[in-house]
Length: 137
Image (tube, rainbow, N blue to C red; front, top):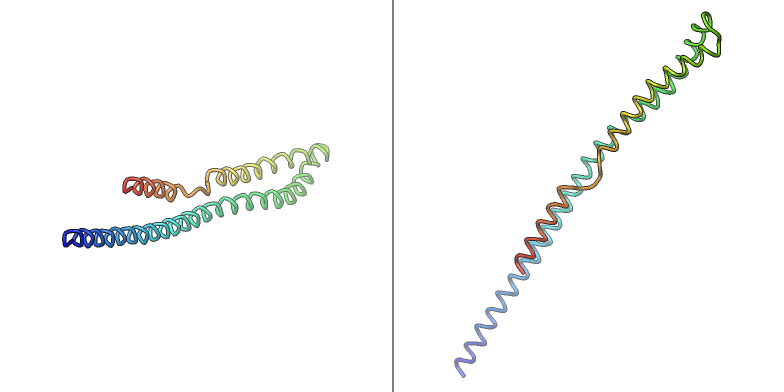
């Protein structure tokens, strides 16, 4: 009987140790998830700032298109109308303005496309954590 009680006592101690290990694992897993979420938030913030620059460039290009269109069309048409016909002068000024503004807008759109919102570092870290957990089990 004494040996059975001793075996039961060791088994209870082992269970307590396993329970402690599982509890510790759960706490560490929660801490890891919180850290991953914080990393994802930071990464998303950085990407949104980068996208903000692209949006500002695109908006500046659009604004330049409007301002340039109004000013150059008016002044250019008047200046060219003295040498060529009025409709020809308007066409030339509009083409030049469109090329300049279109280039600025395309540059902003290109920058927006280049910046993705996918949190690459966080996803990679989560994959590593998943593999680590699989190695424990």
